[in-house]
Length: 258
Image (cartoon, rainbow, N blue to C red; front, side, top):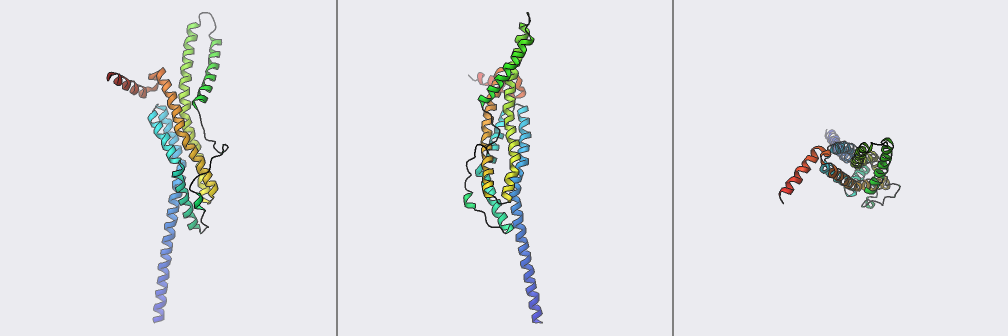
């Protein structure tokens, strides 16, 4: 009888140990997936960013674009991504029973080679160069169309419109650079996730470095957009819609305080 009791007790102990092991494994699985999901969610987050910024630009809501640009930079900063990647790799190694990755080398990211830093970029000089080239072509076409005697007034009107459209187009193109950055990042995130899931330390570090560089480009892109939108406002405040009205009211209030 005592032997049977001992067998039952031993069996119960094994069941408890098995349950505890299963619970530990489940917690480890869930913890790993939580970290990986945070990395995976970057892809959809940046497509959402892209859509939101498109709306901000359509409304000429430059403060919202500025906030988004700095949020992009923060979300992609190596100091934010590296801890996530390290944690995910450590948990994955435990979960899969693999050798622990060399986490000591994951304290910083490598320099990004010029060929790897393929994120969209646009300087004010590049924007003006392309705009002036296109405007010169438009003006040449207009001068050929309105070239008869007595066409001077019509030509001047069309040239004025073309020059303002060039200004408006500069603001639009500059704003879309921020959108292009979001789309670029969203397309890169799966590679970071893949490298992390496969415990490819060097490749994951390169992916983080490339994303970090793309994030640093966002505030620069915003500054170009801000300059282009300011130029448009100076030429035609009303062309900015509600935002232009708010700015005009603010300027009027500022003058009244002098």
